[in-house]
Image (cartoon, rainbow, N blue to C red; front, side, top):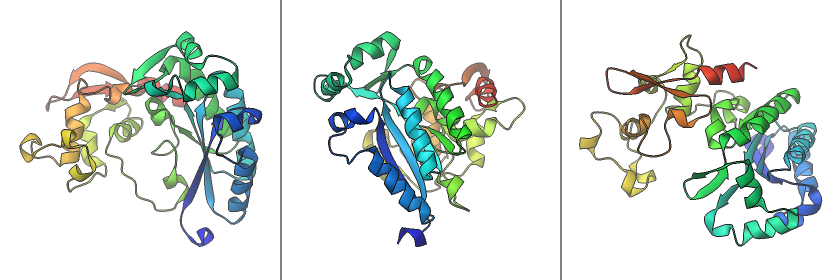
Length: 279
């Protein structure tokens, strides 16, 4: 059935040595079975992707080896994401994984540098960046599209998302781009690399309400929208930062400037990101 459909099948696996998989991923059949699935689907012309997540600090080489095996099996896209530690799992799942891996995961992450992101703890972007850079180069050397699963690195991805890259494998696909990442990616084509709020007006976004899909505390009334759709009003509330950790400057390689446009929106600069992607 899938061979006759316009679909992308994405599988996932933790970035760990295979002997430890039964402990860390006890309800999976193992990575060789994942590779077999990719091989069979690819042979029938079904586009496949592999998400390697979580990547445990210290096991980055295993993740790259898994990527190589997946490329041989026929994947079209690879994505990578480091471990996030929910606070409530430190004494349960993370403790069990630490025993299996033979080191204290939380201690290792603290040594490398951690930050709080919502309810989770994760490595800092400085700690992640060297591997994200290697993973991107490795994917391209394998002839496979790259996706950065860690949110702050999504603009490093090939395509408009971190994981599926469906517009790269499905002809004529249309994609929602009126978000921070879409504005950042659009800025990379401009000589000044300026990330401007007005760019969102030129990108595809919902014209009708998205309120039903949002937490009720985040919904905006018509009076709060200033004539914008509720999605663009939602973006406007967060564009300058302060409402949440997210703004264009949340993403690696993008910097806030002192420039404010006529509508009161801060202008950001993606020059560092452009240099990184051209390396």
